[in-house]
Picture 1 (spheres, rainbow, N blue to C red):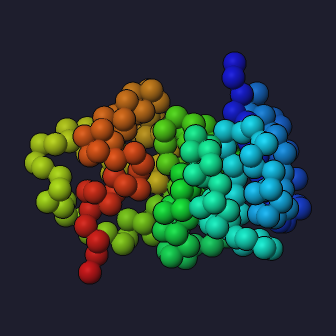
Picture 2 (picture 1 turned 90 degrees about the vertical axis):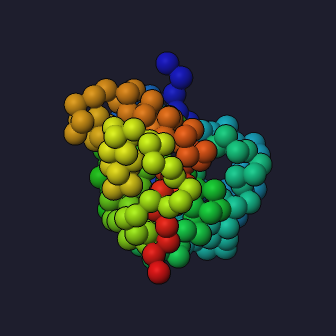
Length: 211
């Protein structure tokens, strides 16, 4: 079984150690190493072999958003998950625009964090429920002209609503009584039909900006 290789970039030593411990119990996840600031991470990034980077925002030197913007173009295949205390909508949108795939609040449970790491490796864009609400609250509930009637099936619309609500694939599968793989298939179909690649892009495509 190929393990998911994870790097942590976090200036709080207690949080770093806690996350390392959480990951150590997961048989399919391998902790690679951690960095206490973005500058050291960027210096080492070209030599690192990893799949997912857990990135704090507020750190000495370059912040997490700046780090992602600089690192992502070098290795587009690496997935960046923001893990922070900030719930400011501007931080969220800046992080997603810089190349972050998901955005989690630091009070997220260990189980939720691990699920987010797995989901991001299967094409998902995990967000804490609080973050998803902030994202959705900036949009209205009416479809845009860019989404044609009948473009999405009823089930796909249901899945997209749940994705917009911040639910993980596993949670959607449980709620809809279907397999996680079926949820992934629906998500892939939704993204293909909307010509997008992430959950955030799908929400922006389906819901216009609020006035």
